[in-house]
Image 1 (cartoon, rainbow, N blue to C red):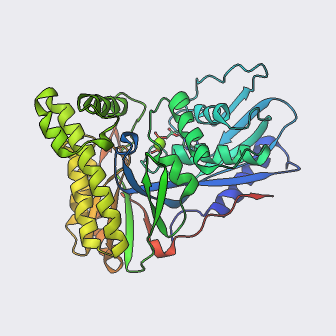
Image 2 (image 1 turned 180 degrees about the vertical axis):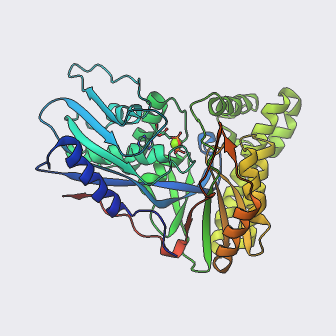
Image 3 (image 1 turned 90 degrees about the vertical axis):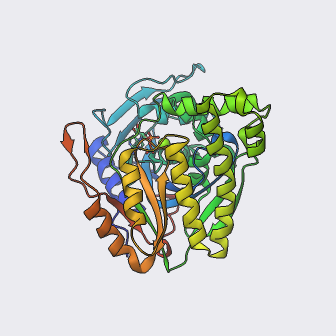
Length: 406
Ligand code: ADP
Ligand code: MG
């Protein structure tokens, strides 16, 4: 089954067309780069607790195409619509070392943040077009794929030391300081280091990544979009992060990665109920993620699926980051025989679910979800979109187009 989404090559053709239309000419030396979005199979809200995560890169990508200019100006146009924000941004690169400060529109902050944290400053002026097949605010990490695409683009203009982990960290810093999201390292890490046909078990403390092969033709990973947009720069995400830090501090640990359930039970009366539940989710989720990676390696998909469902229930009940639409999508998927497991993926409060199932029940599963899931309304608009976002047959995942010069 082919992906219904444009390939990186198709996005690049579209971006090039837009470049000429927007800037009125072809550039003499055109750079084209791309970076993938990701789906997290298990290990949610564990990255900023120094725990484990198990994401895989997707063939949904952000493409950036453009060229250097002779001045200190940056102009970028996006082909993706995000709320009522303008599609074109323009700013001047300070030459006196003044930092690029965040501002409006919101999406410009991802570009500014990456420039600010680029590891071989100063960067030259440039103009470019951005085009992405990753849904914006859908929990598949359009933000990290945008950051990594911008970083990779800058590397074409002015090379850095090419250290991939430092690149991921710089992109994470950009999201912290400029987008206002205190995210963990997972999204940027997998966008830089993810490859087709494998998931990555990432130890977010040591930054070690172990590839877990994921190319069994009998297996399908289905991503469904609740079409509920999340807003991670609101108060919920930072609040969760703070609660985890508080729990770790009560337990006398550097992070919840070092805590066991016994530690938590022993300190039960030293923390409030909410903090206790948040910590319980994180401690158990870290353990589940390591076990899930083992199951996947051994082809024990039933066990993997069971852990996915446990993860979802924990995110719903203990961490309280799910929402009605995500819960309904998971319930619907789990009603189909041949489905191993299903869970919300990403930060939560909307976005997507990820489901692991036997390849031969894919059509039945999609149909069942479509029939049983009521049409969600948000704002005063009923979404005409189907809930099934992409369905991706793992064995058909393609390698990303290498970054190139046109
Ligand atoms: P997610 O990373 O799950 O998609 P986030 O809320 O972290 O959700 O990031 C979404 C935001 O990233 C968008 O609201 C927008 O500001 C920015 N963004 C991502 N991709 C693009 C793009 N191609 N063009 C413009 N803005 C983008
Ligand atoms: Mg994001």
